[in-house]
Length: 263
Image 1: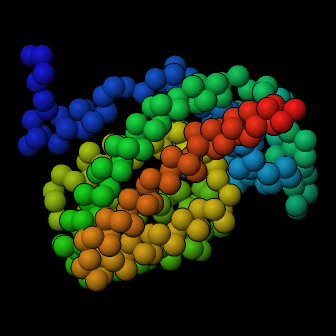
Image 2 (image 1 turned 120 degrees about the vertical axis):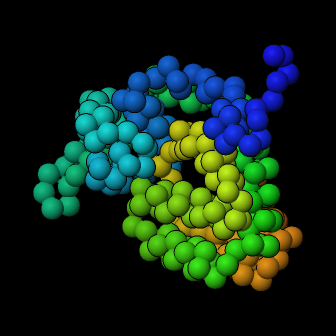
C-alpha cells in the first residue's frame, strides 16, 4: 500500500528498503565497462600515477567484485586506449602509461554523473555507522576487539589498494557484529556494497592514513566510550564527501573555474 514501510523484524525487507532507490547510470554498464571506467577515472584524477604498476588481476577482480577474465579484458582494452601499457621482464607487468590518454573511456561518464547518488549513500552510511559505533562501544567484548585490532594491523601491512580494500570491508562488518545486534550487519552491509560499487583505486599511503581512524575507533571501543567512538565514525565517513572521486571532481572543477577566471 502507499507509504508502507518494510517490516523492522524482517532483515531482508530492511535491506530492500535501504537499497531504494536503485543505483542509476552504472547499472547500465557491463562488468567489463565498470572496470574500464573505474581504472580510467582513477588515472584521470591522479589516484593512479603514471608508471605505477597495477596489482595482479586476481586481486583487482576481488577488490572490484568482478571475475578475473573481465579484468584481463578490461586491462587489455585500456592498453589499446592508451591509458595503460605493458612491459616485459622482471620489473614489467601492467602499468599506468607514462602519458596516459584522458577522456578516451566514455564509460567513466556514468560515474561522473553519479555524484548525487554517491553523496546520498555516504550520508546513509554516516547515520548507520555512527549508531553502530555507539552500540559497539557499549557491547564489544575482548574477542571482538581483538579481531578489530588484527584487521587494523593487516591494513597497516597491506601491500596494495586491493589488499587494503578486503581488510577494510571486513573491519567495518566486524564493528557491526561487535554491537551484538543480530540484524545490524545486514542493512549496513547493503549500504557498504552499494558504495563499494563506486570504489576506485586509491594511493596506498592515503588508505593507510585512513587506518589511523580505524585504530582510534578501536581505542574508543576499548575504553567503552560511545561519544568518542561516534565522533571518530562521524569524521571517518563524513570525509568521504571530500576524498571519494566525487569530492576530487568537485575540487578539480573549482580549480578549473578559478584558472578560467584568472585567465
